[in-house]
Amino acid sequence: MSKREIIIVFAALVAIMYAVYSLFIASSSKQITNDTTMKKAEAARSIANFSAILDKDALTKTDIYIITRSEAEWEKDPFLKTELAKELKIPKQPVPLEEKINFTYSGYIEIGDKRMAIINDVEYETDDELELTGYIVERIDPLEVIISDIERQRKITVPIEPEAL
Image 1 (cartoon, rainbow, N blue to C red):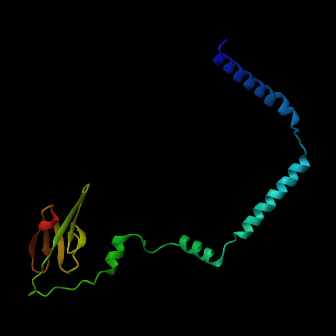
Image 2 (spheres, rainbow, N blue to C red):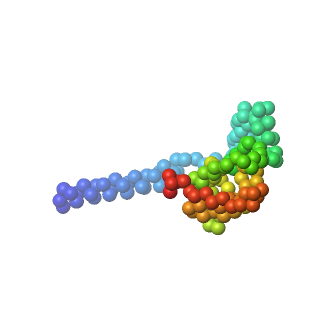
Image 3 (cartoon, rainbow, N blue to C red):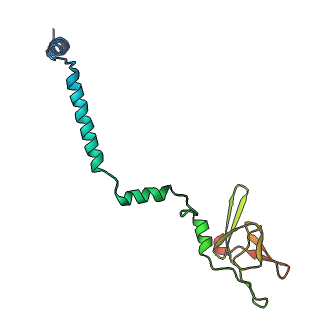
């Protein structure tokens, strides 16, 4: 036999001897105890440890307050930006007849059937009333918006800003 074959056979014999040792000799030296009193004592220690951990992490008054407030009904969603922005806007005021109004159409958004226009930095949909009382968004197109002036019974066509294209 060559030197290589001898090394492979030797490694295989070592592996077989280790397997026999771990299966028969090492397993018989372990003693399995089925003592129920030891199991009960161990369970009691575990329960004592868990209760000590729970007592240490008891809720403070602040934690209780936070939990009760988070479970309460919210009148308004504080994370909904559009509702919050509409509430903070300046109240609507009628525009004098002699004053000329300039509208700025700076953005267009279309998602499915829903079209939105950004007029004077505020988002509007069709049939929404503008911040200025007496004006309603009648039609929204990608290149222009038609706004109805209710008092004067006229329509104002506002083209989109060139830099918005």
